[in-house]
View 1 (cartoon, rainbow, N blue to C red):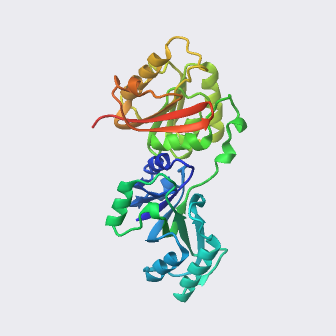
View 2: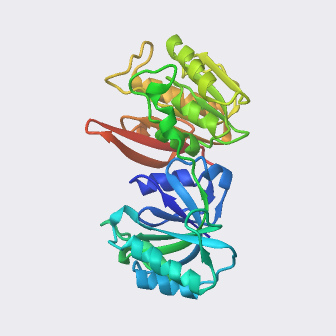
View 3: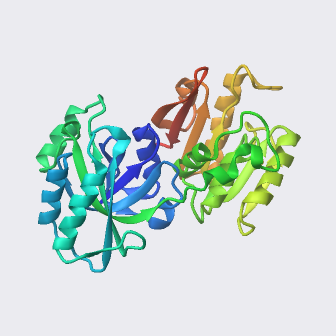
Length: 352
């Protein structure tokens, strides 16, 4: 079992993205999730997961309880160690310095040498507690498994297994060769690409590619890319950005096309992700906005394989438009950008 250290404030969205790299993801407590298996290569490319830790023990959210749990745990490794403690989102008030000192002492008593600079193993002590959104079913499930309910506060002890690569600051939209206002932040673009299934050997389509932000992030985690846009300016700009930022060995195709009539054969892409035009800002020459989104979804379904996932982001809830297409909504999230903009993320799959 593994503990996932989630990033951001939306645990449900982070857990959904984490499912691209881990099996059986379940939220454990604010900022933390549990998983049964982790694909390390894919986890390194996650946006909203900081790290995966091999789960060692759980305890109540106190230094004494954590120390007692560590004393009783089976420690099947050798070499030097370091302890890193976190009070996740500041919810417990636990002294992380005291936790590191006490837990380090337990490890020394059990024969380990401490190396704070380059340890062979890093023990994570993660303290979290209910943030006012307690789930009674989650508490009951935890109690049945002999674990501490999240609403009572929990400490998770685990050996650091792998961390994600936090390089999003190097690809800000304004630093790309081609930039337009309103471009999505790389961290969000990466998360959406991951939910859509971006990975080596998979082909990801963005039928309204704009400046190419989601395609850049999909390409950086190994996917092959197909992008279309109705404006020549965007097509040229996307090509420029992909040439500059995506490894040359990716299979990339970008063309001008109507998203409701794509020049692609049936079933040739493995995932779709796009940011639909926002009503007040979009320039739609040949379609009403509702017809455009429905038509794009229908075309996306046609060109996608049976196991494909489509991620639609928009400034509103488009579930009614999804209904007549071959997609079904399996998850939906609301992501607040600022006071006047909340993005709605729809995760779509085809009925089995």
